[in-house]
Length: 246
Picture 1 (tube, rainbow, N blue to C red):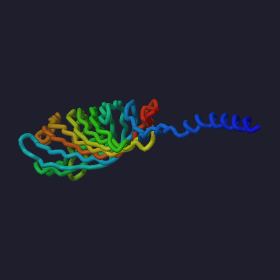
Picture 2 (cartoon, rainbow, N blue to C red):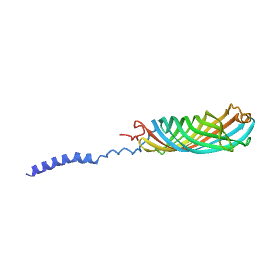
Picture 3 (cartoon, rainbow, N blue to C red):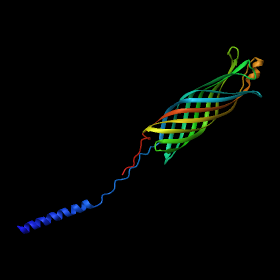
Picture 4 (cartoon, rainbow, N blue to C red):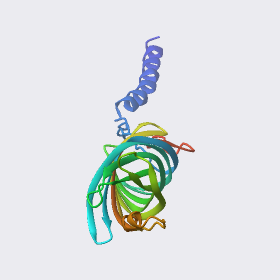
């Protein structure tokens, strides 16, 4: 009986020893936590709205008639594509905005007449270079072409009647800077400032009144500033956070 107990004890000891040794071996450390990386790549579409101001300087022939500033609301949309390489983001975008920028002023050169300038549309075609920081935040600069839709009118100062008008589409350049935040996998919102250099444009009118004809040959210089709030939606899940897998 004694020999039997000794043998059973030995077998139990042999079975427990390997298991105990296995329990004592160090376990592998869990993989380190990797924060989600927000991806800005993909096509997007969005809307914007805000404030604009345009500055116009008018010359009648060789006579400067002064400069005026006019400001008003902006509203429109944008469509573009971005691709991301590390923390750098590159993009192309087209933007169109309805504008309400109008101003009327009595002519210094001929006070019996008033001039009215109005900008009712703005378009931008730009490239972007951005830096993605703080994961879901994007800071970018942009530059490219700009176009404005304008109407220039000559008014009779006492009555306000329009005596002549001309419409023009002007092309120029644009530069801007913006900040955008990805608040959801495919949604982002931001703030942007743009400055448009529209250069000089000549306006010529053909009228029978000799006194009015002397006023109507004019040159207008235009610059535009825009501040807009933007909201974008990216298609195809390109903006979903990506987590490293192990």
